[in-house]
Length: 331
Image (cartoon, rainbow, N blue to C red; front, side, top):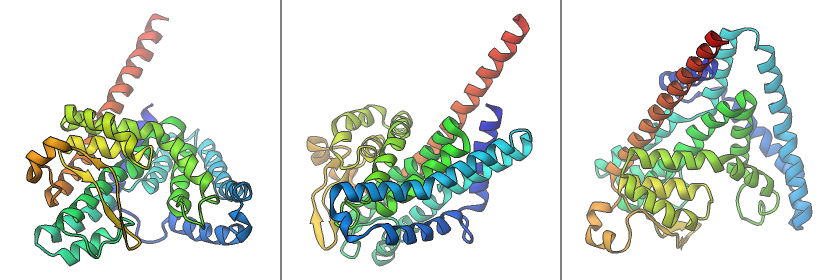
């Protein structure tokens, strides 16, 4: 347990000090490999449901299994060298998380938004969301950025930490590669509807528990009553089974209205509302409207959740060590 906690703390410190690696990031090389594999195996005959899913599943295993196996072998190799093991685990987890990168992208949106630079804010928010940003107004930009911070807090930070704690280096490598493949293949388009099915389903399974732990953390650290109400009433209405609870709880925790219509591929799509709704939203529209301050509050909520998880981890480590010592004395 001490090794796990030290590695998590080390990874967070590395991310805090270094931020996201600008050059030679392993996931960049993995992304290039993914493009080659997809071009090879995603053929026209994959329009058939069974063939497409089989080819996508094979491509997923081809990309993920060897790397996970290699990471498992390395972890075993370092088992007898505690310091090296901690450094290795911390480095892998640091590569897998995107804490400071998320905050930097959020600040790049909130700062121009506060200065009234809508074009700069639109350009910045376009870096982290898939919707069309050219026509977004201030509230739309703030809502999109706040949603992204809340959702990616789970995807880019807490799910990676969860799987490292549960399954070590192979666990976090499996999660990060699966999440990357879902980000590249998990679209319900003609090209990826069947081919990306396996990556999307694996990512859903891997995110199920950590997403709900993140939602619970947001609720504890914010407006708890409203967060739980929004989670229960709105969590299942979102298109993603894991993003829904996280974003609904986060919107409630921050007392901000999110979701709603958004432009994708030239058309406005209707999405469920998240956060304070109906009479509450009508009576206090300005109070619940997303602003640049909402983005900063979402970042603060993510930071508080990082601290909460560290405190819980430290408490668990102390309790386990206490009982181990106690049982050793009485044995």
